[in-house]
Length: 477
Image 1 (cartoon, rainbow, N blue to C red):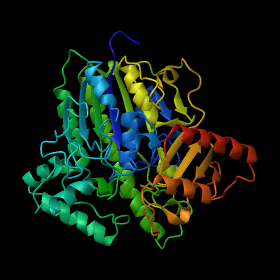
Image 2 (image 1 turned 90 degrees about the horizontal axis):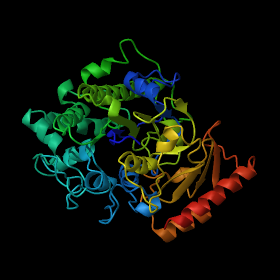
Image 3 (image 1 turned 30 degrees about the vertical axis):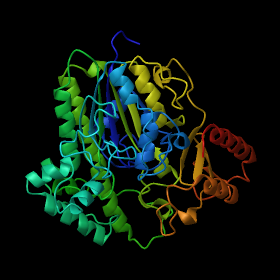
Image 4 (image 1 turned 45 degrees about the horizontal axis):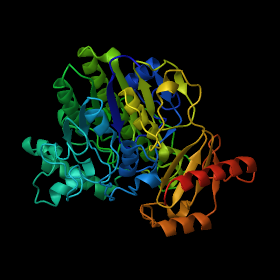
């Protein structure tokens, strides 16, 4: 490691599929800044999250522990008061100036007090507790509108306060309500908000403001939690034209039998592509400001998402399932000590960012973490990292080796949050029963994720099942 610890810019989106990046020629989406970052470093194209829903995924990353050890079972679960937080170590032990902008959603609000997701009009509530030196937090878009409607149209978070001051809050909420009525997955009309009031533009501007007041005499860490491409897919008038003038055709959903016309799917995917391209513009603005500060050569840049989005594949929307579009995320890393190696298809997990952040900060991660540092692997000082990665939610758990995926406790007919509802938080004894009663499924990702290939690959099945047994024995259901 160099004498001076590097700065760290961590950009985390919300609900972004792993393959919707410009580096993938099969999807005509434009992400030039992410492609440039990948060319300077590495695109870890086979990365999954430890749990495919916001709070558990983010709590696992903050704590460096797998889903069953973190015990943040769903978005409504409060994070344990004694949960390990790597931000605290970066700030208090490594001397970093730790900054955060956007939705820092790890299972409760930043203060630990009701109402949930409330982080204050100034966005600073809970900053000290979570290990930040400076912050402008906000509720997620869905929660911000609900909080304001439930409080007599008085803003309860920083973004709605910003819109209210500009006279835009009520029409924004009306737009949101219309999307809910007309179909949150298929509503593709543009929002009436101007470009400079758009949510992720506002979050990015807040992050730039934090960076502008960062000290020059010590390393900084900046975490930017962007909203998109989380539903609703509301985009501005200018963004609405990006993939419609001229119209761009995207691959249709895989194995979709819903009563949705192909052109409707195309319209949805044009909106979704626009949100992804806008995220790339946000990344570009952040990287450019780092360059203007003269910090680019001394800054590790990490771009990822908390989980994916099914986008109609296998008749599913959102996340929550063990299928790859749900658990998979993009992950691109560049900066000092990161070998420019292009695409890497080894199995990876965002859980390992925790130990990596700590090691980049000159700290020893500690044996109590499940997270394993990527620093040596990214620097080409280690040829292998993990052979297997894990994820889980509700009753199901999965293990993935980069090609084969074994899933236990999953019933595709009882999808979490689907028409047949299964709650995110399933009690331990119920989880164990469901995992015993439901068949273990083995998927070959070179084919699809609906045909069980366990009988065809019995050795793979036994190997992955034994690995999942060992993994679950390490945690506590």
